Amino acid sequence: MQAIKHFLQFQDLTREEFEYIFERAKIIKARFKGYQTYHPLMDRTLAMIFEKQSTRTRLSFEAGMHQLGGSAIYLNTRDTQLGRGEPVEDAAQVISRMVDIVMIRTFEQDIIERFAAYSRVPVINGLTNEYHPCQIMADIFTFIERHGCIMGKTVAWIGDSNNMCNTWLQAAVVLDFNVHVSTPQGYEVEPERAGLYDTSHYESFADPMEACRGADLVTTDVWTSMGFEAENEERVRDFQDWQVDADMMRVAASDALFMHCLPAHRGEEVAAEVIDGPQSVVWDEAENRLHTQKALMEYLLLGKVNE
Ligand code: CP
Ligand code: NVA
Image 1 (cartoon, rainbow, N blue to C red):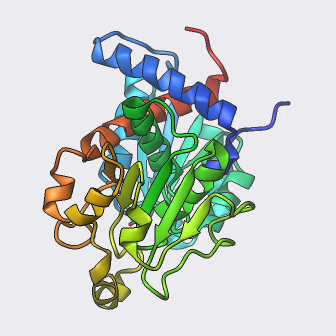
Image 2 (cartoon, rainbow, N blue to C red):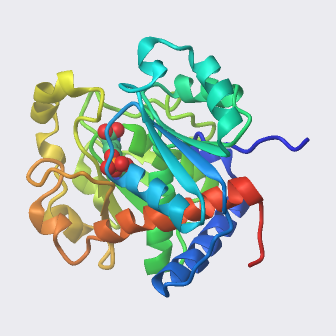
């Protein structure tokens, strides 16, 4: 029997697999924009387990599965036995006998890894404390749509070394580009937590302006991620000099893009004039969650197709 393919962190797929998924996403997007019916996942069911809140992830997975001819079931901790302490391993065995594919948004990466180890079907990471691989897949597809290729390019990550940052660092190794990271002191990247087996694709900068200099893409995220709310006051104080503003965009490449996975806080991690300005592609990024995840689900369930 062929091993089940999961997408638990970015480095679970190879460069060749991402190239295939991006090609499929382009085709699937064009079909969707042309109102063409495409139902390769007829009668397949996706279970979506949310232990944290979501707008984009729920919407893009649920709508995406319907558009591919299948259906999606939303589960959360409050209304399921998961919230009453049912072991993850037991839940995985039961849920994966009833559906064809599972998406999970949860806290520690270990939870999703344990679920996957007991699952009979592919499991997708819809965000953990450590990683957000579906978002970075959509972001890179968005970059490719604008600039053709990300290989050899430079991404400036400004702010917290969170799940988004860790995933950019993994993606840089898989797809061969560079990441300049600037975080306040005390919030630096921990290569081991980022799951990095190769640290040659990133460089740290004390000064965020220096991290942005010449970058092809400037990106940031909230200063306080879900699950870390107790640290919010302290973080707002510590991150004051890490707001992406027009000066940072000015020292980046003249055709640099700005990305943010959303939701955003104008006046905190990003100035309104940047996120609402001409270099910002945040709405394309959000939309591309839909198209890239449809391509991902098609690949995990059907392998390579030629339609
Ligand atoms: N970017 C993202 O994952 O958004 P949601 O939290 O709304 O799903
Ligand atoms: N880093 C953020 C991303 C939200 C989509 C969080 O984990 O809350």
